[in-house]
Image (tube, rainbow, N blue to C red; front, side, top):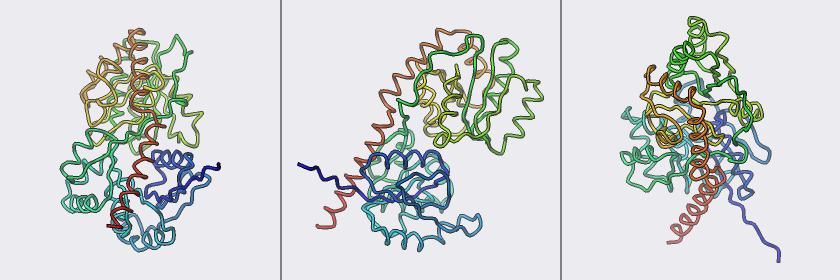
Length: 370
């Protein structure tokens, strides 16, 4: 007997420049359960079998979303999907709300839930979008708790995990060099300056260390000058931005060479910390700040060390412990890998989202016939 597979037709509304959005698109497409369309302002990596629809930018104003409402309506009408999934509640979530289409899901990411509601207009936009949404999801428990201020609805927790078959521990590393690494946008929010300052103190105690920074952003010139001021040009490497979707081999080669990973964000809008999960999956202990969702993914004294934000001395002491103690690095690395296998297996996370798609579509059809 031939099994007939009925595929859902889904529209993703999101910023296609984001490696995280790209990862959702790639994984959902690979499931072969979805005919996938993407509506976005931005280009970026495009995947075979996915249909992309471009929105029109009128300068760089936030009014772009308002001015594209009718275009989104027209595109959605032409697709006639089973479901819309909007990533980021204040922008693409707004477009999903005013598309006039149901059912739609909104996924809250971080700053949209923690920072945007400080503006009274944006708070009203969020409350309205959530009120009309057919389902809501978030990436972390702390975001789900914050959501209670904006909606009484049930909020699904679907983490942004990693492919545990691609992110794996590397057996052989250079025994004569301890590489400390971070993967961050080089902006103030992510606290890379404090990592460099802590590393400067660390370099006075240890010869066999190196700091590697993957990422780019507005603070890069300042951070490069800071490294020069400290005379650390031979010990600090700026790799620049590497897209893990289009340059995975390069990305994983650098990440898996680290002995210690640091993620030192300074704001609670760092609600998950995907890079920390990737590092743990590779068996690398993590030094993380006590903000947002980082203490959820980095278990204090089990998979890594938690330090206060913007605290150079505490960061130095945490790094020093790990540089000085290979057994502690090994133990925390093993624990980190086990934690990821338990909670952040990307295949399971993708299936959770696909199940939410199916449930939401089914519930919508039932409600229409009542």
